[in-house]
Length: 470
Image 1 (cartoon, rainbow, N blue to C red):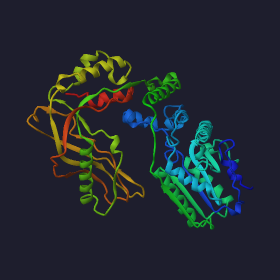
Image 2: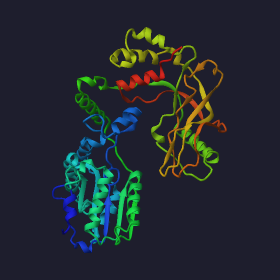
Image 3: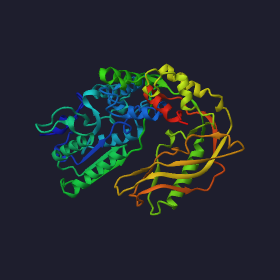
Image 4: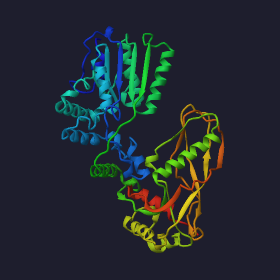
């Protein structure tokens, strides 16, 4: 039984390093997450994708049978090659976390492991390569990477009743922790480093629940340390090539009865729109949060703004009475069924005529008029609750009667998280006046930036933003 968990859970050949001390002498367990914690793993560059395609890329089970970004070893394989050709040991490794790992690995009574939800059957080889390349090129990092075990998610039976393939990543990790704490039953302290807040909260809940049951009477303290995530991006040509591969493999996996699910990639067109500079967005959001705290949320709930850098605050525009009506599209497209997405060349021709419309060449400003919470139905919830905020715009300037936007409201703000349990219930269509800020002005620009989308998603976007019945 001596040090059995180290050998059982370690995924890499020759990397199981048994502690020099006996089981009874091990007093601490230090656990390090890999992606965006120890290692600045390549993440999908959100600036390259439409929001819908980005969501598909991030999903573990899409594209079908291929897996999303985090289920494919290619991004880490590219990182390994770039690391091999670099003279910078911290090109991908997080220096601050490696320094902590060196302290863990130098402590004789501490058991230290890397624990990741990456699947062993897909990622074992690339993890071996990354560690081998790093230690070969940068031997000074040896103490920082001298972990007792590198544990990837296993796809084999642990016993007759449980198949690890059926377990969630969190359940897999907590099963591993329980096994270590059961074997090393003199451990008094556990420290876990992780960048994902949902994982941090889940680990806290796991230890709180079991500590209250006195499951591990010897365990005196545990620390779940949230680590500011650090990531990297692939070179753009390589990332686009990878996404093309995922889409191609997705299409190959489809049967003849599911042709409607086939995708092809294309770049979105630019459009004329009103937009806010980043500093204006920050100013607008600051005023919005302050106003919400003084009105809807008066009990001290913490409001946090999410994903500001990834949101484009813009409004598509056109002239009144010169908007492209559905009848005009019918005249252009002939017998093409727009929503069928079967003739992409005809679709792009229609789309280009819209963007080339001379009606879209004018100057016009919008100022903030009011903010509305379009729909809010909040119930008691121990976890964070997101609010989608909408702005209602009123045109200003000498030409305000001559121009027109199809929608009177636009989702222009990212979600705001309420950390505490909200007290508001069943609030719908609340409109809260915010004093106008003359420094916040919508300016005309050609945007948003060109991004990658798919034929089906582009067709849906055209249907949403262009087609208009009389």
